[in-house]
Length: 268
Image 1 (cartoon, rainbow, N blue to C red):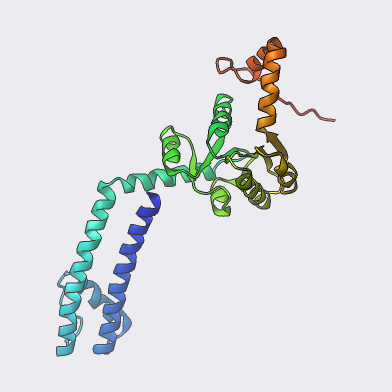
Image 2 (spheres, rainbow, N blue to C red):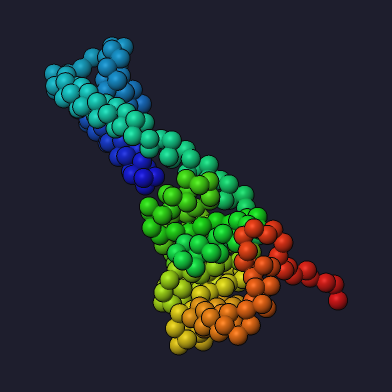
């Protein structure tokens, strides 16, 4: 929606620029006036202000002025209709809200970036929210991104493997990035892009197929989490050591508790 709003404004600006350019060039060519007089005559003609002629017009100049008046009226009507639609359809408020959000993201430092809010990404998001970590979400699906944004979260809608999208998410200032796009190939490209933009950022990547582990590590992942393997271990542990698992869950997974195991760096 933001792109559509920007496109509308760009179309209006280009169209007005073309009309002003044609009018200015026409008066310079037909009447032999200087650039400023030609531009001023074009402006008052298109705007139908009616200040009067800058200089006396030749017959050819008057014919050109008549055509410029109709062209200007049509352009003005089109621009007005587009601006009205821009405001009525909510594009203006969306653009302002998006600009405000991007400003907030630019002010973040040492934050976390979650790329992809699928099943795994949602769990990561819930945990970071529970522990009140600063975060930015990158989501390719426009509908999903809109839902997250409506909840007050900082969201960048786009392909996380694209450098410009990661830059909007503040990858250069981020503390860590979660690569949970759902497919190993996508996570591989994302890991490579993130490492190229920030050599110090911590990259944690989800793994589905064990054959990609070494590739993800070589591309710059600091940690590769094998979801099927961990899921299998969890199933086995629930069967043979349920009390231990329950205790650890209360520290790590239980949403009703606010305490967690944490790491505290100690000076050597």
